[in-house]
Amino acid sequence: MMNSNEPSLSQGQSSCNLCPRMCSVDRTSHIGYCGETSTVRLARAALHHWEEPCISGDQGSGAIFFCGCNLRCVFCQNHDISCSNIGKEVTVARLCDIMLDLQKKGALNINLVTPTHFVPQIVSAIQLAKSKGLALPIVYNTSAYENVSTLKMLDGIIDIYLPDFKYYDNSLALRFSSAPNYREVALDAIDEMMRQMRFNTSDSICTFDNNGIMTHGIIVRHLVLPGHTHDSMDVLATLHARYGNDIYISIMNQYTPLDHVLKTSHKELHRKVTKKEYEKIIDYAIDIGIENGFTQEGEAAAESFIPAFDYEGV
Image (cartoon, rainbow, N blue to C red; front, side, top):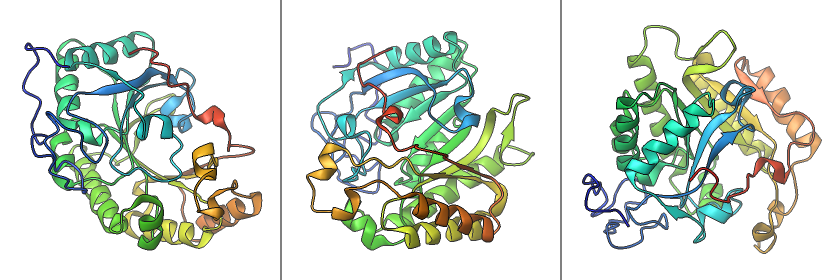
């Protein structure tokens, strides 16, 4: 657990309502809906090469994988750390050092993966790391199931938001993520991310360095699920109508039915996305005028996108 020299990190966690679950659990001594106490737990901190090209580049993104999750989708590709006891406890001081270590290893950015339930600690660690020379862009990699009030704690700290927009149909969100208000919550969250990105720059929202690496902006991800192409089209139409080409949209076909999914009653999730299904979504994106985006070619659905959660770098 955290030692007595740690700063006070219970902000928002003594009766935790950091996320839309609003579970009000005292996470300083108990476990919240996310599966975590207020002590940060990590599964991996290493150079990661499987993000969008403008995030990973050739050198790799400095991905820090946090344990626990406030959404807990039935098909989670990181199930081993989002819904299990895997994880190593770290202090804020250690989290700061991990960020600095990744910078020394040549990471293009610091990529905070599933960070929502540890935002107060992350803010403290980033501020400490910047005082010690951290100069990389900070990426906030999230399901978008976020409270706007929590996102406001990150205003001026995050350089790149990397949210999902998983579902348009809230009945799917209820079935697969027990989140019947997902669409409204996610869009409010992305609205807040847009506000921050617009306020903190006089240039276009999405900016890149000379090597094509993103330095500022928003990429919204959508994972196409088998059997639900109509929902994917609704997702893309909503994002494009709301944000136009101010954002990038990453249309992903890497869905993999892992062992824990095959044990569920959600039969449509027991297979990968077909080539025909994915091409239908890409054709639709082009037809409605989406210009700034990423697609995945070939056999992207593979366990290679899921790193070994072996505590590397932790």
